Length: 261
Image 1 (cartoon, rainbow, N blue to C red):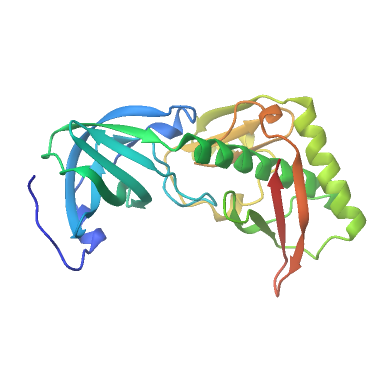
Image 2 (image 1 turned 135 degrees about the vertical axis):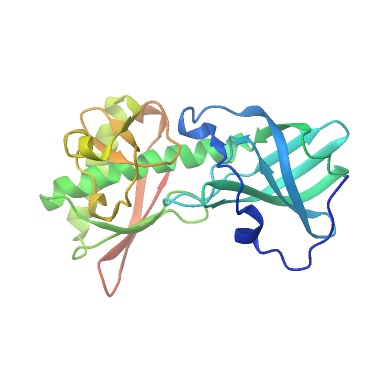
């Protein structure tokens, strides 16, 4: 093992100059394992480390989605991934060694997702896009989203609108579950800024998009097409029943709580 203890880790300074991590989940949300090169690591304290790989299947927290968890495994080595951060394009995996010692830089390690957690997040995130569609239908226009958590512990979406009546809430739930039962295909493609106007349909946050050369679009055929870097199922039929638990009225808009069965 190389590397030493750094009492206070400044992650931004540490990753400065590192190449962006290849984010495999952007292409295939169903990839459960991959081999990666251990590029660098730093010890926070004891058995707890920050780790950078050349490529990763672990989605970081962001874009309304909680981070993945899982394991990094090597010869006589096992590391529990508890948190994943995206720091200027570099994915930083935080966790602790549960067996063996940290391998040397340049070693091959296997990334293994906590698949049950990931797949539930995929179902919840696609459900969130379906609920966006249903909300837009009930309100009669595209409703802006202000915040969201498409994952545990308590999924929600914040909409910049007056709160719905109980009847409208049931209509939103019924419309969302109709999309689930119709089993619409979910496709991923990429578009330039100039192509967004033609490619995006019913997106609730298009005005807040930062500039990029390419945008990843999650398209639910016949429903909507939204710029998104999250992980999603291939078909709305995989979501399961969408359950809307209620809303909380906020100073600006309302928070809609939901889940999938």
